[in-house]
Amino acid sequence: MGFRVVYNIDKVWFRGFGEMVGEMLDKLEAACERGGIVPLRLVFFGNPDNNAQYLEHRAWLLHLIRERCERFGWRMPLVGYVAQRSLDSGLVMESQCVSRENSRLVRDCVSARGGVRYFTIENEEGKRLFTEGILPASIDAPILDQSNEVLDKLGEVLDAEGMEIHTIVRQWNYIERITHVPDYPGANQHYQDFNDARSHFYARTEWRGGYPAATGIGTAHGGIMVEVDAVDFRRRRCVAAALDNALQVAAHDYSQNVLIGVADKIFRHKTTPKFERAKAVVGTVDSGVQVYISGTAAIRGEESLTGVGIERQTVTTLENIDYLVSRQNLRKYGVKVEKSPEIQIFRVYLKAENLLEPARKIIEQAYPEVRALYVLTDVCRDELLIEIEGVAFATH
Image 1 (cartoon, helix red, strand yellow):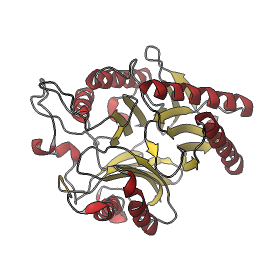
Image 2 (spheres, rainbow, N blue to C red):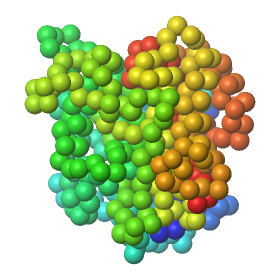
Image 3 (cartoon, one colour):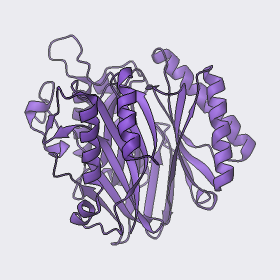
Image 4 (spheres, rainbow, N blue to C red):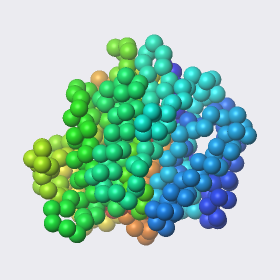
């Protein structure tokens, strides 16, 4: 398919929200002119005070981006807004861009009932699909209700394109106050409610090639938001290989001991997080392999490293990633590459502000050339201080 996505991270210093967005779009415009690229998806990380302001910021973002697109003749990109405060800037943006030539192949779509914007690109090798950040009708509704609604909207998108749920290769799951347990009898942790909804949604299909790569991460506000990349292959040489990590138990195989909440009424147990440690997409990227690295933390087996501090947790998290994307591990799962993939970007999620400098020092020493964003948020377990996800690329 020869459709490679170029990832970048830009940051601007503290000012009014509209001014920061304007400066960010100036940077994006300059980068696109230099690189001969156009934006496919933009994900902003900001600091709204509450859900009402989250929706105001999001509406403002869409308005300012649409104005800029009309001025420069760009297609309106897909947009996500995440309520996670940047720890080293006022506003941070991850841009996902494609070449001007490839952008002409992109089909812009809106789902009939849910009103979800998404893009597809299609040729003889298959179809790729990218969604915007999908939100429910109300971000103040119960988390389980929001989760079911958002996943139903995603299902509508896939149905419209004739793509099965198992074609999802990367999923981002943003969950407001992810570790919160409401104060009433039988209440579930927010993350467990989402996991139950996802398990029911995923049960509609068979996952012969493994689950998607995924991140389930907390936000301060914004309810539930989901973004996905999906690929429907048409040639045998094109595959999405699930990558496991011998240092960790697969998340979908966790025991009941590490899950928080009550048993799902239908499954009759607490459902596990349904994702793989990484997913390698082969055959639809320019002469290479794209590796989606799931949210990764300092977990060995299925147990978190506790009482060891941010330095040890950061080192252990990077060791997990290094092992996961190593040439040897890829070959173990049938993905032949000339050398270990190169990391393109990192997203670094930190539980407290004072963790930034020690974590950043270790990451920059290990990966001095990698662009990274650092945001403040809860991760999926109270004892974990850091979680890292990323994208890597290797020559096939």
